[in-house]
Image 1 (tube, rainbow, N blue to C red):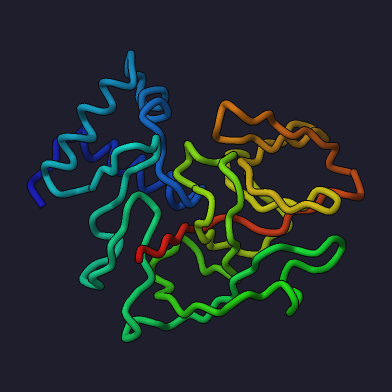
Image 2: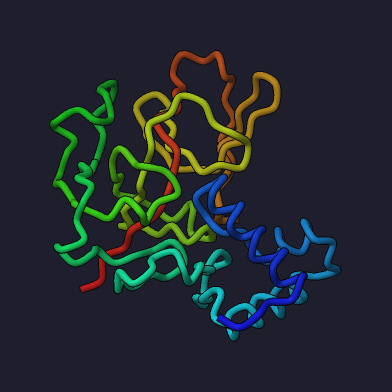
Length: 220
């Protein structure tokens, strides 16, 4: 990798911190806001320079299509943003249950919800996941999370603002960005076609099921 300028180092560190804190890279607009750029175009120019120098790879078509080049080392995995193909059997180290549709009122890791088990390299994730959840719908499209993707999830019961979480609302399980202000919790989509979900934190029908720590996509 070629030598980076001070500003490029700053942006690279920002990307690393975002991935560590939320499991996903920042958008161009978030980089611009954080560093005081006048527009997202300025952030894009710096990202292109980082890509030319081999620090990152940029995947077109998603607002968070940024991947750190050193995230997979020499494992030979194909990654796109935080989406990754399933690894070669020689790299399989962590066994994770794949959760499909969740029955109303039952634990998310109940045996009847497990569709399959995948073995993956734990180094792929920002934290050790406990299970994979099959994504349904396009409410998180602009975060690069698409229908049919496998979201790597770590079991938690609390979250920080801005993190992408798996939440239970009554009989439904949903993936959204978490925001809490006082007793009000907002579950924010990453697609303008969808509305935020607002609940009271003391509501009996709300619970956090986990934190998104990575995303897998298997290619044929």
